[in-house]
Image (cartoon, rainbow, N blue to C red; front, side):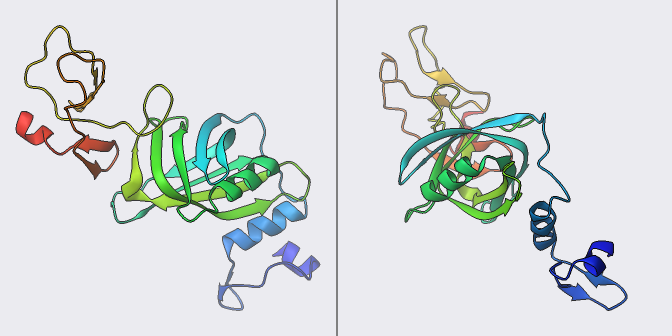
Length: 213
């Protein structure tokens, strides 16, 4: 309220009453950053991000990342984090294509690495006004989220779990019971076709697993 009285350009109330006004949080944060009232935090854990879009692939580091995963496949996931102004511009360019961007790998501290098969958009960018960086927010349909492959990124494609596994099997096995078929596997080859569905918390899993247990 003190800043509002002293600065004519402070954001106007978005609701509430004269005695108890309510303000739009994004507008206030943007004003605080632009006027140097708050600064980009330092010494924060990094969240490595690999994105593929219309302009190619880019690897970058996000800081103080907050990941909000929806529990409904029809909902929307959101990621908010600090990054450099250059990376924020690159993210916007990568996501500007007709199908948005694809996240090959995102490793936010405290969560398992995830991947997103397209439609990733940049929905907001807050400028600091001091050249310290931007607070960006990415969003994507929750139903496109899956587990990231441990090597190389990209979505883990689980196939049917084999009821019998021979000693010669070279397919990668996962905690949910699925496997990632390997063309070098003499037992399965690529015959274990991926059959998948979304479920909260663990990304992609095999629809056939229920029958296997």
